[in-house]
Image 1: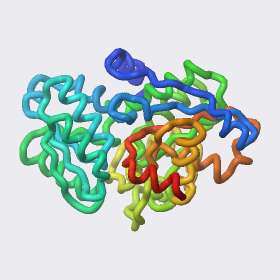
Image 2: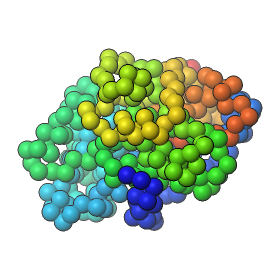
Image 3: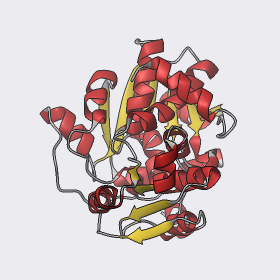
Length: 317
């Protein structure tokens, strides 16, 4: 995949997704004595960036693939993206989610008219079941991250950021399986290799961080996380591993308590609702503000599908 494929993805999905705002955050800029911009994908259709990659993938299915339908595994946001795209294109979709998926996301997934299956305690168990349905029923598996067409769709965020503000020094990107940071890293580095691309994960689920550090995809023990959208392993042989090695300058791990604080601050100071996965970039600035001093930094707020009981808890903390 290269920059041309990301531009082709933007042409396909143009008018079908929102070009989300890139807004200056006065609060975060003052906090780190720099300049911080928020890319508000929490305002995207379905409340998350995932619709970009899902739609780019489904738009390229053959007639036979559309007839057989698609299957996906997701902790929530990818499922909504696939569901929205499938309904738009009149394609049958089956979604497998792990049992730790927040109720607010399950209800949203069900609203798209998909066949919803809850299976396993964490993401990789759901993915294995979905892969089994691909093999047994002939459905097209739509990966949340390990698919060049999905990655190209996510990379369109990088194009929008640099067209709005080409004079950035750093971009902070949430990382789970690596689809978002792979696509954005590919786009950003092709346009300006001098811009630093930083991936952010929680200390509770640092799978990509550990895989890059050890030089191979690893399976590690994970803890519960408020950033459940980034929780889970990486499929063996995933294209995102090599893309992260090539396009991501460094990875940052943030504490769970800081993610909760970042969620609360985004609500109180920015009037933006961000889920845990969407708030990790802000948490990175809060934990190491000196690193971003005198720098122009963009932060991808990747989603806003947050359970409102958790909103109350975060604000109370």
